[in-house]
Length: 311
Image (tube, rainbow, N blue to C red; front, top):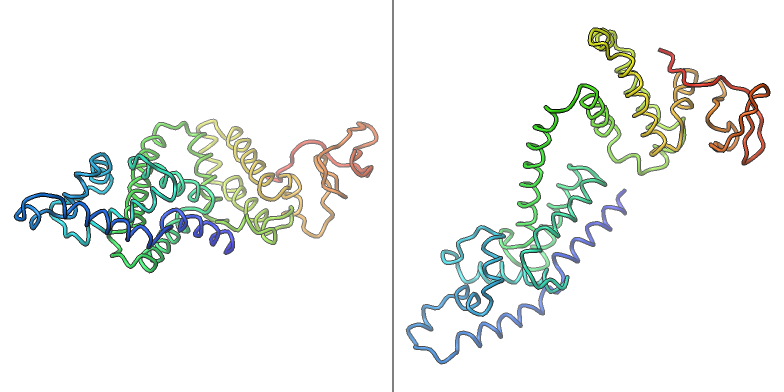
């Protein structure tokens, strides 16, 4: 996991903090050329860095105002120059001519990270990127692109949260339960599913945790009573079991029945009809009267049909 995070951080730093110093010389040259044009001395004295740069880069200046929300006429030349340079580095590093596309590009990168490592870790990465950006550029934190990137993404998260709340209120009881179950699993297992020591097999800690979460619903008398009152108990059992099955198959490469058997009878051999007890293959031939045979390794065995949750 640590290595994975370092890779992500390296990619983001490449995106945000590439070409840290060579652009500064170019900006200085451009600024010198602009200021020493043949214009009246009085105008030269009052012409700010922002006004000079804006005259030469009207479309980029317009994008920068929209992206940052800053009133550049009221900030110092130093701040304006640092903000411009920070955005210019990112655009040059990624071949971006239209600066308006910088924001959606960065948000998409953070969204991918959010999906992979969760909100808490993504926030840590954003903070780390800002600190590295400040160290490498020597800019004020508030003038770095990484600072604005964090603002954009936190705003996106807040908007998404509000939308999800509205969407959640319109969900059916079954959809609400499914979403609640998924969130509970996500919060309990975190990013441990990336580590085979925690996730591999029906006897793994994560498999145990997922079955435990499943039973926190299905063996809760209050939950069952409310579900039966709504005539949804059978649907809820099927929904939760199917969702647990999907998660276990994805993260643990194990079937729900295997995990349930081991959870309830840890001292007994785990034998089910859906996986070979020797090689864990799902390629099984059903001999009906003679039991089951693994197509992969040839193992033959007997086991009950169907799903038994031991409720």
